[in-house]
Image (cartoon, rainbow, N blue to C red; front, side, top):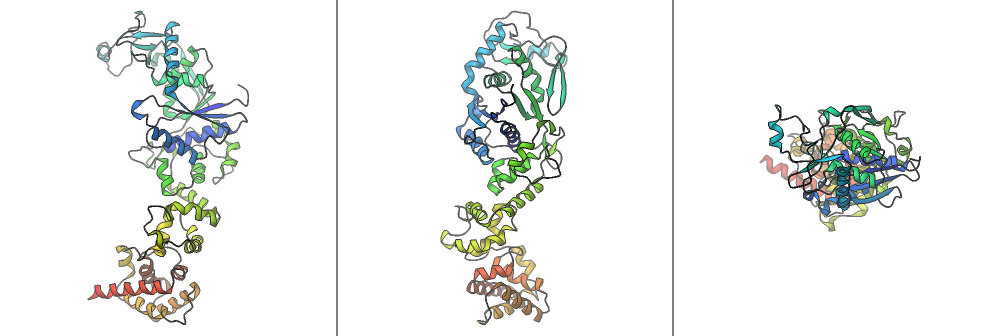
Length: 477
């Protein structure tokens, strides 16, 4: 292998969602491929399982990779290829192993095997090794594991890992109907595609000695192996789609930026050094070394990812931030009518919101008061701000003060007016502005209040304060 001929692969099975662990594996492979002028990352879809062979699921994989910046527009990308397209080669290779004495047919049933064993959990006992069975109904094809000695896997992350042959049963490589099992199909595909490095999750490590034996039996040098550490949740349990938020699509839909997700995933088991964490892809790629990946489990800290995302959002230019918010602001699921949205108002409020959101979907509750005809109703916020002796009195005083035509409708003037009004009631600014905020926005927290009042306009503010005051008075009756 020349320095520039590295060929790595990412071979997911379509499952209807794209796991963040798979995304990390793809990125590590992508980084390796981009480090060499002729490096390639091959995308191969493991589609031989008919139940999972849905075109929309494959399209989802391609879309997810494209969101991460991995796609056919880059010369380092190759594919997608489909494992099903190599079915004839899989069958041909199985027969080649049989003819060369490296595999044999076996008609043992599970019940027969268990009857010969005291422990039903023990593996295959080699019963058919020397029976000379021909192919036939109910006869699977098993690989003949060499007697004695170990298979040594040189793993770039875990070092030298030995698997004693006595612990590896003669494993099935093809069913009785000739269809290959994954262990064989995977090796054949890698051989056919010239794969030189296999970087994948550690759950595949137990399959590696079998695959390496197949590589050697076929007369090829095995690829360089590297098994990535498992990703765990806060309880240090392996991430599970039944328990954890693991779908890359869900993070995308929530408003995580692709560049923040890429940055964070690259740090799950690897670090660029110099205590740097926030780093663009272009700077991480030349620094990445798979041998520097830590073998210990990697904690997927959603809070840290969220903080990363906030950093990336704040680093955007205002115009780009506005553009990135478009799916949430002008999309089909916005809580306001299209006619009530004012792009110029959003442009004015965007810098205030940009510094406060950690994910783009949070833009909606931050600015909805500007485009909804009435503010949202939040009972907890209402109860907290409209306490007896504060809410009604402050709203009545604010309504009178805000109605003064001599009051300049600008943020600084509104702040001063609210502060002075609160002082007449013995309230500091923080207490005085709370009822006004809930009356106008529906929430106790949000964007800076007085800039919000300025943007909403005097007429709409007065309408909302008056409506809230009327509601309070009706509740007191």
